[in-house]
Amino acid sequence: MKRRRAVLALLALLAASGNTGTARAQDFPTHPITLGMPFAAGGPGDVLARMLAQRMSQALGQNVIVDNVTGAAGSIGAGVVAHAAPDGYSLLLGNWTTHVVNPVAYKLPYDVTKDFAPIALVATQPVLIIARTSMPADNLKELIAWLKANPDKASSGNAGVGSATHVASVFFQHETGTRFQLVPYRGGAPAMADLLAGNIDMMFDLATDALPQVRGGRVKAYAVTANRRMTAQPDIPTVDEAGSPGVYVSLWNGVWAPAGTPKPVIDRLDAAVIEALADPKLRARATELGMELPPVEQQNPAGLAAFQKAEIDKWWPILKAAGIKAE
Image (cartoon, rainbow, N blue to C red):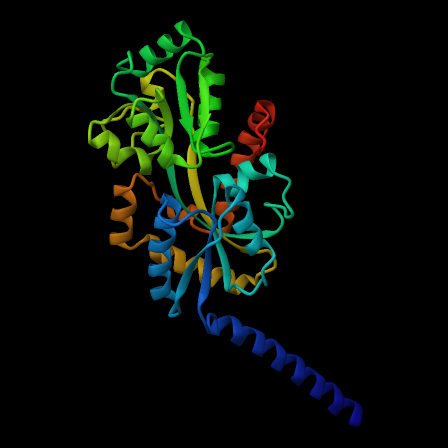
């Protein structure tokens, strides 16, 4: 009888422990959440992070605070989250650079496929092929022909080694058989300033940064590096239409947590992301900035994991062959 009572007591204790764990997951979150932004304030990723954090705060009933931890092309900020407690209170708004390019360009103290738990794909934005207004080519076919006829004479600015603007330049050269000088800057803003001043000839720039200059008539826009036209600027042809088919490059963002974060917590966070991305005001602002929001079926852990894997499979061979390494 005593043995039976002891077994029943043990079972009751185990049941209570299980219920406590469930209750904790159901109660999540009980205090503010940090959304790591591994790039500088004011950039397109930071703007997206703040829009997302504000709307997720409403969905979760707790503040989501954006924390900018910059350096080494986002690898420092990403590392902070990779090594954080897996409790759902430390998240990362990473991107193509942090989760595809950096493992090739840097020796990282973490693994981008094993040390993060994917939550949701958030947004993508293509790269625009642009040039100074006096560039002697009025469309992409003419630009490619001019570059082939004048190898190494043109200069193309980028936001630094391993950036989307740098990799897009290298990829374009490889796919089109053209050669031009690659000029790295400490970010996209100084590169754009030199383009507007006529100190460099062209850029492969993020849509968010390039569109204001395109709309103002201060640069020529030849094509968007995607297989469909941008909602924000549908008059710019795709590379397929303009004469360089298949040269697709996009900077995309996703939300990750540290590996080992409990599934109920991941599901709660994913639901908050989905609710945020469904908000009409957020969608309108993202579209205005040149971002495209993914379909709902990619706004989940499996969708982000599959998307990242496909990007790694595509880009790692290209990056390694090009010798992309941080200086």
